[in-house]
Image 1 (cartoon, helix red, strand yellow):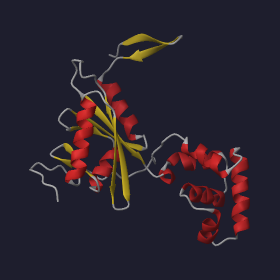
Image 2 (cartoon, rainbow, N blue to C red):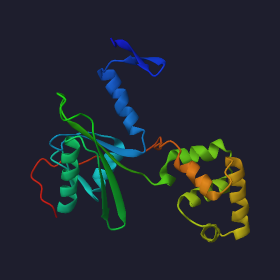
Image 3 (tube, one colour):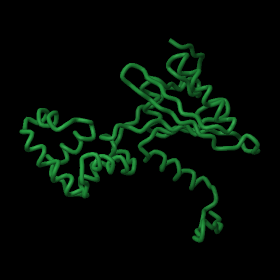
Length: 228
């Protein structure tokens, strides 16, 4: 049975459930619903948990790999930067690692979850860069909430992809004036005085993953590992 304790935050009291297997299971489900890849590492760099987007990134093997249960990079340089960030996090320091491989960019934030002087086992949270804005389910939910027409939603997604008015018109085979009119309607429905403010509002939407998704399983390497 779960026990509860009363906590006070500012002047507001609230009830908190103590840690249990049930609450842990729900917390892991929450991680899977966030549009950021997240990994939990121990002091040796072993992956204690990876949410579904992190597992997908590992399975792609573009810049990250799971080797014998440890987080590593696809090159010696990537692995070295990951290890340096992990070492800093274990000393209580936060680190941001920026990596690039071809046309793919990946940023990783290393955050210590325990203090070096504390008695609990040191763990580090690694948060990967957010998915493409257009892949955020909240953008389509935003379109539904504003009652956008299908064509207006197409224009909205095109703006999120960074296309300008002329590019949107050419891609959809319509006149530039039509796109301008659709953007004007978009701004009015969203209460945004400009395209820039509209996109700013899009960027503040909650990071929601699609309800239906396919997660590629990560193949575990039980043997040794050498970089290509």
